[in-house]
Image (cartoon, rainbow, N blue to C red; front, side):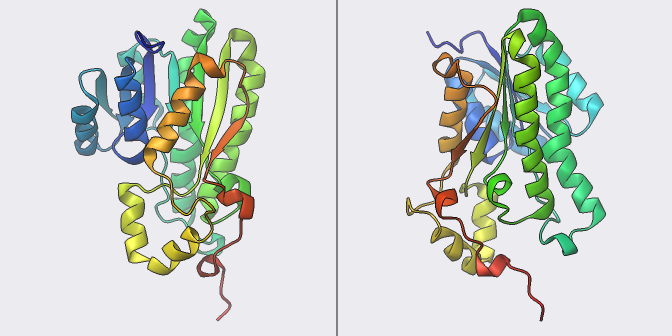
Length: 256
């Protein structure tokens, strides 16, 4: 029997990509998985792939009422995976609108505050729990996407704070920093910008981009007993890209 059997896992952003892979992996490992996403149609596809252990829940992760309703419906959460993110309207800082900045920050960082706050009381009462949050190599390298990079940097700081404040309750908090991961969304983006895709590809010593399962495997390890002494840190899953970091020329501001 898997150590995740009987555990309740709440995952945000499960409609596709990394969130979907994490949801399927936990469900296959025997956990009861609640997946919160604003896209009910795509989340239903995740449910069909994950099976009967997956409960698809519709809601906005940056909305306090939606998050509260989700946590109440799925019951005490043993493992929280803060995965939801967006880059809509993001880019070079001087081009980002205030509205885009606020939206990206809300989905990428405020949602972690809301979801974590909602599950902490039950975790504290049980004196056990795991909180995993998806950051990014952007937080370590300043690669691109101003609002996203700032928010993902905040994820790392919040993760360290959670480990310090709640470690005494038996709660572990860690972050994962993915590199370039080929998802449904990123494939379309790179097809539209082959020059960017080729420059990014050349930055990976592994000679390939990652896939969602790479992150899902890391999430399962961080949530399990084999990582019991890992707390308040970030695991980089980027195929070595950050070790040889350079900014692709197509991402640099131009004065002309």
